[in-house]
Length: 118
Image 1 (tube, helix red, strand yellow):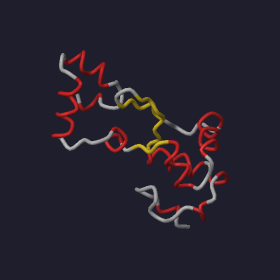
Image 2: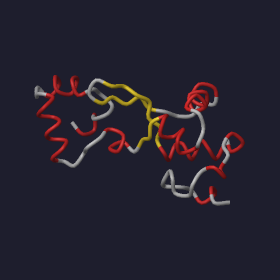
Image 3: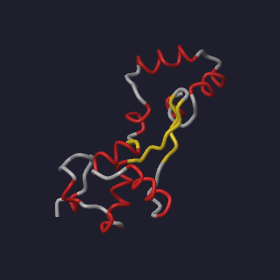
């Protein structure tokens, strides 16, 4: 169940395992898994925009036109875009001209690569 959490909806997982959604949520809680994003190591588009101090539409533009990698995450009835922090830093290294690094506080998006400090 844990490997599908965030990839498939809880409804899909519950049907597959023949368990109620409440039973799955209870099990996730007991395992110490309290949120899809934290479990998968992702930030939302809005969280990334806030960290970088840019408009959220800038992030969507990077996804559409600059191939910023993203994942589609599912939590209960919600679906949202998640961006893996490590994948973001790899993308950012190749697209440094798009980001004003002076606006980003150190250790905002960890793990932060060494080249960011330069």
